[in-house]
Structure formats: C-alpha cells, structure tokens
Length: 408
Ligand SMILES: Cc1cc2nc3c(=O)[nH]c(=O)nc-3n(C[C@H](O)[C@H](O)[C@H](O)COP(=O)(O)OP(=O)(O)OC[C@H]3O[C@@H](n4cnc5c(N)ncnc54)[C@H](O)[C@@H]3O)c2cc1C
Image (cartoon, rainbow, N blue to C red; front, side, top):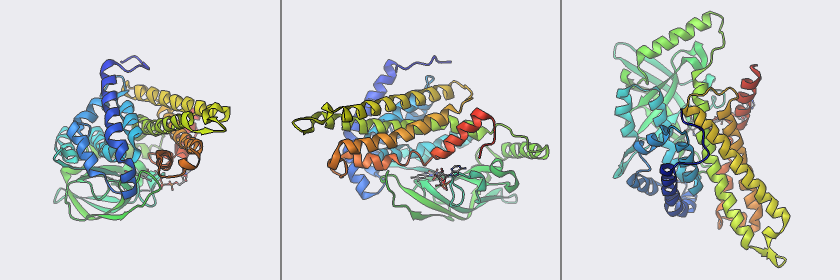
C-alpha cells in the first residue's frame, strides 16, 4: 500500500509539467475556436496522440500509479487547459476503463487499441448508458439485449442519449438490460464494433458548455453483435445473474452493489476535472485583479475582491485534497465508508461552479464577454454537477452511506 502523500514524486512532477505545457501551449490557445465551432477538435486530439497523451499506454500508466495521484493530476492539468477539448481527449478513456474493468484479456487486447487508433488515424470510443427515461434512475433503462443462441449473437434495441462521442466513435460500449426483473443487477455491457449495421447517431446536442465535446443520441435497431462482444463473457454473466436471482428469491436482501464501488473509484477523476476548471478561472481572476485599476488602485486592493480570491483558492485546494484522498483510497482498495469518492465529486463540482462565477464577477464586463476565458469556463463548469451523477445523487449516496438508511 502506498502511503498517502500530498506531494508528487519527481516522476509525477515531470509528467505534470509536461501535461501543463501541452495544456498551455496546445489546448488553451485552441479553446475559444473549438467552443465556437462546437465540433470535435480532431487536430488537437491528433496532436495529443503524437506526443503520447491520447493513448492507452498513457492512461494505463496513470490509472495504475500506486499513489493514486496519476489520474487526478493528469485530469486537473488537461482540464485546466480547456474542459471541452480535454473531454474530447479523455472521453475515450471512460469507455476504455469500462472494458478494462469488466472485459476479458482477449476483449481488452482486441478492442482498446481500436478505441484509440494511432497518431496518423485517431479513433474515438463512447460509453453509452444514459437513456431519455433513465438518467439518474439507471434501473429504469429500457435498451434490451436478447441472446440468439442458435447464432451465438446478441441483438440490441433501444435509444441511448447524452453519449460523449456517440455516433462518431469507432467503438461503442453499450449498457443494456438482459434480465428486466433484476433491475440494475440485470444489466450487461456490450462492445459494438466499428460499422456495425443498426447503430446510428440520433440528434447531436447543442450545449451550454464543453461545446468542443460531441454529445449525441445513439440509436440501436436490431444491432447484432457476436457473443464475444459481451463484456466479461457469457459464463460470467450467467453466474452473476444466477446469484442475483438467488438473492432476489431470498427476499431481496440489500447487498453491496459492485457498481457503487466502481462509481466511488471513478468519481474522483471527474472531481479532478472540476478542480482543473476552477483553478484555471481562479488564476485568470487573480491576474486580472492585480492589474485592473479602478479608483486609482488595483481592484485587488479592495478586501471585497481580495477576500473572494482567498475563498476561491481555499475551495480549489480543499476540493483537490478531497479528490486526492478518494483517489488514493481507490487505488489502495480502501472501503468508501463515508462515500468519499462521491464527496470529492460533489465538492469539486460545486466549487467549479462557484469559483468560475466569482471569476466572471471579478472580471466585470470583460468577464461577461468571450474576449476572456472565464465566460467559457463558467459555462463549462455547469456540467460537473450534472454528469457522472448529479450533485443531488452524490448527496443521496453520501447520506445513505452515512446513515445506512434508504433515504429517498
Ligand atoms: C454533456 C454531457 C455528457 C454526458 N456524457 C455521458 C456519456 O458519455 N455516457 C452516458 O451514459 N451518459 C452521459 N451523460 C448523461 C449524464 O450522466 C446524465 O445527464 C445524468 O446522469 C443526469 O441524468 P438526467 O439528465 O436524465 O437528469 P435526471 O435524472 O432527469 O435529473 C433531473 C434533476 O432531478 C434531480 N433528481 C433526480 N432524481 C433525484 C433524486 N432521487 N433525489 C433528488 N434529486 C433527484 C437531479 O439531480 C437533477 O437535478 C452526459 C450528460 C451530459 C449533459
């Protein structure tokens, strides 16, 4: 077990500085353009692939860092550059982690390289779970996967929504119902290989923020995939479903949901993205407050402004500490007895929203225009309290974990 430390080691500092350089030199200068264009920033992703940031190797290296700080440090730096572009770069990783966590070795070896492509021909992946009527309430998912035993194929039908990279991805990972009576325990994940007939993109959403990241519906009409595309394999699924049915028969005794543990481990990464955006806005506001003069002195000379900056920085640092603690716990197999992963995501997301709003205020009229980046950062920050579980859902998870009661 790695000791918890608040200091990055030399190797991590090198990686952080390298990422920061990429974020400052490549991502930030491109941010306004891709926000306006509202399109996937392919050239930036290609650049990231060339230097090795858009690759499984890089992601896996950070993911398996025993201190737990690799992923939060990487997310913070990239999202400091720009949230929309950074999500376009790390979005594939969300789908890849789904395969890494649940796939067989063969599935990992076959599909993950196809998710990334290579520097000359980059590819994307999408993770599709949410549906029009199943957002926070994942158990009400309707997309069905039915097994055709004669052909050893699964047939999927349904509509997914809000999928990052949905429809433009080379590989889609789709969560579907295989046993409707078991609620969320009756779900399974499937790989949909490139160019599979029946999968199409529905509407692409025009968004408030993170506009460089593509978000769309994914429609599945009689999509047939080989049995080998069921993540983890049929035998494992049958065993899991049999156990769930046994438990349901025995009175539905509440068991610790493995998916919940996975969320606790993945949510700090989203918290780290929020820390990146919050820190970026705080830095712009600090610089501005030191140089903008009114009443014959820099505006930071007023306590009303200086104290806001003090609060902003305090919140950013507090958010990072919660994120680092939860990431360290995840990597070291600690149990999240107070839902520390959800706590970190909740606090960091709310911090990003608040700090970016304060930054807009400190920049005054300029903060309200697209001439300055805080306007975009404020729009971007609003996503953190919504995706990967809304703030209300995080509070629900924390409250349930603390109380042991089924609070609604
Ligand atoms: C830009 C973007 C990218 C996304 N990317 C992906 C992706 O790649 N893959 C994917 O599968 N999904 C993705 N999502 C979906 C995202 O995870 C969902 O939007 C989110 O889970 C919320 O679901 P919903 O939008 O249906 O809101 P709803 O669940 O309808 O919630 C609406 C409001 O009601 C509140 N609420 C709901 N239930 C409760 C409750 N029990 N107690 C208190 N309050 C409650 C919520 O907090 C929220 O404020 C993305 C969403 C966006 C906007």
